[in-house]
Image (tube, rainbow, N blue to C red; front, side):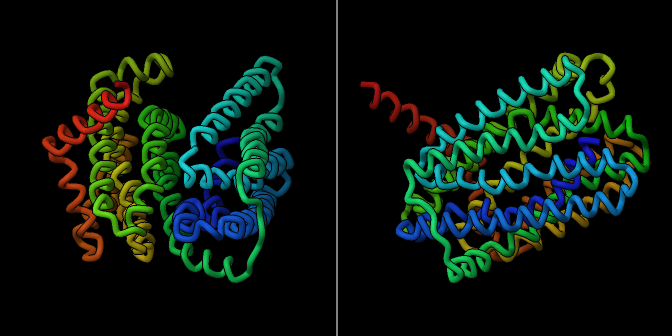
Amino acid sequence: MINYAASLVAFVTPIMKLGFDATLVRELVEDPHGEREIMGTSLLLNIFSSVVCVAGVTLFSFLVNMGDTVTIIVCFLYSLSLLFLAVEMIQYWFQYKLISKYSSLVMLCAYALVSVYKVFLLVTQKSVLWFAVSNAIDYGLIGITLVVLYMKWGSGFSFSFKRAKSMLSSSKHYILAAAMLVIIQNTDHIMITNMVSKEENGFYSAAITCATAVQFVYLAIIDSFRPLILQNKKENSSEYELNVTRLYSITLYMAMAQCIVFTVFSRLIVTVLYGQGYVNTIPILQILVWYFIFSVMGAVRNVWILAEEKQKYLWIINLSGAIFNIVLNSVLIPYFGACGAAFASFLTQFFANFILGFIIKDIRPNNKLVIKSLNPVFLVREMKKIIGTVIKKKT
């Protein structure tokens, strides 16, 4: 029931965010003196969109599950997290100021507290309704704390209709692109359940959880580089392409190393995390984990697209990926089950985040940076620079 509510919320989250999760840092970099207006406008718009989305999720649940009061209440309680997720957007101000260590610490503490809360609910055997609201508590703790910190260190809030129009015009491409990405991420689950079984989808979900267990590390690295890359582009710095290439090199080689480790030690990882009952997850994980390389590639590419103001191609990329994924799943799942879905996910990420970079003319310069970053000589040279800088600081 919780997963059902989570799926509904996942589908409306891109609409609630209005694409600001991708563009807010750039807005602040482009106009640092408009910080107060940018933050206030984006916050009010996100709160308004979150209220609309909560109402939408609740209404949809009521119409589809008419008579099932518990499910409707669970969906409503879970969707309340959208209200606090809107406030959590303040974290992008911390990224812009290069002090995201504070927002990260807040998120870590909130996660720990809510995890303890969930354990308490399990021990005391509380109803599903208590679990449904836990997500809202998590985002609520984060959102409220970030607002307090921003009010202490930031410039405050103000609203402007002119700014709202400008920001929505800049972020509109990300809304549809994010919606297409949600379809890619959820289609395989639905198709496995309908074509094979719920149990098979359980094995597949476990494999995804294992494969993305350390995803936060990559997101932290990318978030750290984003303000720097956007600033380089604004200043036409010679460091711009070099920093994009550095980011590609660091994240892609890390992803490759992770894939090798997870493939070799997949049995140990699965049995430790899930137990012997999930041994069917092992071959799925050995295939699925390799899609992570191209997923990371796509995340870095999106930073480049934002810097180059080529957002109009995002929905084309993600729509193509969604169609490609559905077709592959339709062909592979009936014959290979969850392993077929895993291979479809790998091919979809490869197609959407690498192959399309050659097909779409305006994105080809980015693929050149990808290829350059894979040169081991470049990686070794950059690592020597980093180590040398660290040694100099220590001495």
